[in-house]
Length: 455
Ligand code: ASP
Ligand code: MG
Image (cartoon, rainbow, N blue to C red; front, side):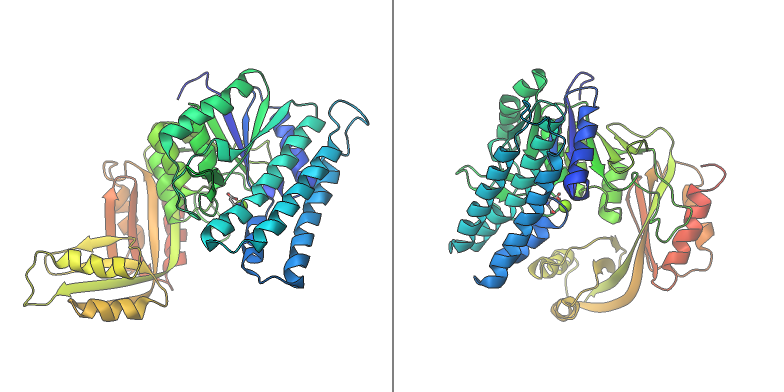
């Protein structure tokens, strides 16, 4: 990270959800001190709709759905350019309309493609970002801001993992400098699609749902950006779910590890891969609300947050605990690997793990496969499953080394039964309680550790 590097502005689906929203977001770009690189998501709901359309058989309902989707973009096109100086240098509504028609035709053609469905789907859903990027570039120009669309397929190089492609760092860094930096240094705003890239053969790939944050982190890291701003529709990252915890408040600053833990454990504000990518490369992120740009948002620092202690509480209901014990005739070694092989075979991710001499316990999301997994595990171990649990995670800095934090947590828990405790770093401490008690436990912990007098 450098102090002089460029900045990246990423606008999520709701921040480009309609013509007025696109225009408001464009105003934030126009007001920026430096020339930002702009990364956009598709208009809210468009990726989901394109995924649905891609799976429909050919016929009138598919044609109608496509027409409605394009009409929504045409409507936005009218709004983003309605303040154009008539005939003025920035008026490019006809060009924008031609662009939308061209994307519409490409979509119609793509739907007829009967090749590999994964390749086909990525090519189709990527059109949502193609459209929003064209709209954003037009909105900027209509405000008099020089802007140029840069196709993310030329910048973000990925493997061929369609639907969940992995970016290739080195090439991407080189391509970002080549295609983005010259524009920024001339004061021209590059507008790029989030979420999409291309493999070595130039085929369109996508980075997985919510992947535009990831694109912003990739571009920000490549260009050694001073900061990546994630413009979304909330004031920042909350210290707990504000729908459940009345005292929840916006966290002003978070360290990287805390942000990554939070992204995994609960807060849906930032894509975990984006936080992780930025963490590894020292780029700071700021979460801000495009609907309320006065709010300072949450800064995710590239170093550690200054004050140690609990910053946030996350809660995840729907957890099942699986306790396994090796059968007496099995050798101790190789036991855990057998257990994890069973889980891997069933594609079941494990969240928390704790082991003792005699048994190992781990948590999985409650799901239908549970009984299958249980059956398969019984072939190698004695198994006990406890369902109806919730995972509570306290996230913060220096949880192990700060005197009194763990003591305080257990004091608040009092006589509440706890089913498993897990702490792998000093950034998070997680434990399981019954779903019936979870929300109340989180409320009490938040009151004491976050809202309390020392906070
Ligand atoms: N448009 C994509 C999605 O909805 C990517 C993103 O919004 O970040 O998943
Ligand atoms: Mg989205």
